[in-house]
Image (cartoon, rainbow, N blue to C red; front, side, top):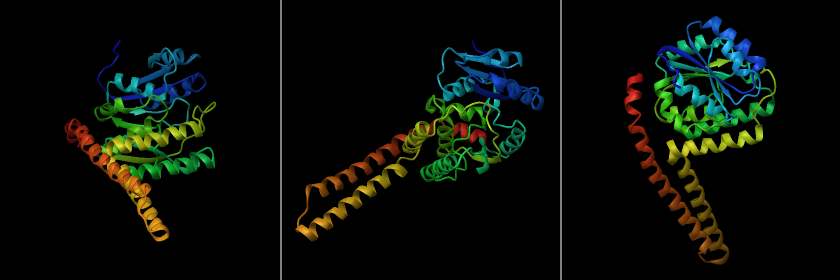
Length: 296
């Protein structure tokens, strides 16, 4: 059933077993934005998440089982009627008061504004280090400074965001994918510093498991939107190994080995794959040019 209605602002909250926090979050949002379309996507909760959201006046979409945070975001984005969509968590970490500053920044001509968490917001030194590493790696892959790659608190123009729904994974790494997709497609992105509060209950993110998943997503999206930034360094590394091995063998044995040849050929094939991928990825931008021009 399609519940979409045309409105200026939609607020989408993915929720999985958030009955302990959701009532307070929705109440604060309603106080700040009484006319906004409020959507809660219940991702297969086994508690009273859906009934609490309905009691608060939210439009509820329910997944029959837990499909993942990204899947809930996609459901919310497909059904949101607002020209501008706010994505935020239902666990109480995100302050609805920050939405005003993010909307003001969006009005300056941006297509997405991300709430960048201050260092003090991270629960541990390990999480702070991991987030900093992801930000650095994504900056290298995209060529743009990324201040908080994994923040789920963001405001987007819906017509731009929907271009990338097919790219978004079903897990927790939707912020990673959407941020890099926006940057590489030429949609302007801004950051607003926020302080993320302590979530109610236990975090559903595993540092090791989801950390590796974020790493793979960065490489995958980097290869899709900026292939030469991924393949060229790999090719240069293989070529350097080949040169080093050749010099070592020539100086010590006076001969050229098959392993050196294999490294040189691997370097050549890698850069050719990068060139081909660059041509294929350019086709992706054709369908986006009109939306990008219309958002300026």
